[in-house]
Length: 148
View 1 (cartoon, rainbow, N blue to C red):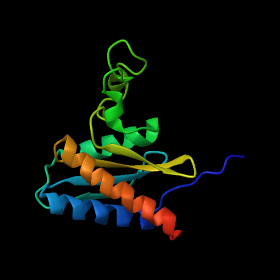
View 2 (tube, helix red, strand yellow):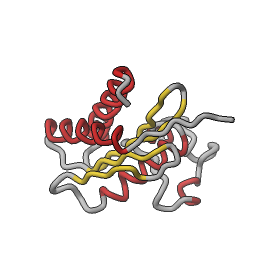
View 3 (cartoon, rainbow, N blue to C red):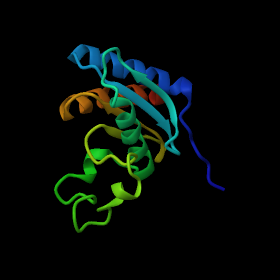
View 4 (cartoon, rainbow, N blue to C red):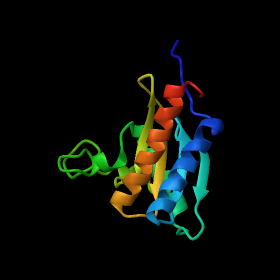
């Protein structure tokens, strides 16, 4: 038997709050998504004024990070698996609209397992990374505190 750890709504809400606080601090209207280990959306928050397209993009980023157990920007870096000639090239065509290979999706890891992921959309790459880092730091704090 394999024990599966899973992020819950109670875990996700503080992550959204941390992401929103960072987005507001840096002045970016973003959409934030938290999904579970199976890439199903648990919580989604579109900040006032965030782009309509951000919802689908944030979900795709979280889906990709959870499903492929890595940050989405790693797919498209030099030598990355989604580049022509590499193992994941063309995978975005297999999952149209669901697979994101640019900055803004980050897996949540607990006890060596992917328990979910976050997806951030609406800023440039550095802004999405900053908001993602705030959400990951909040997750790490929750784990360290043993509250979730």
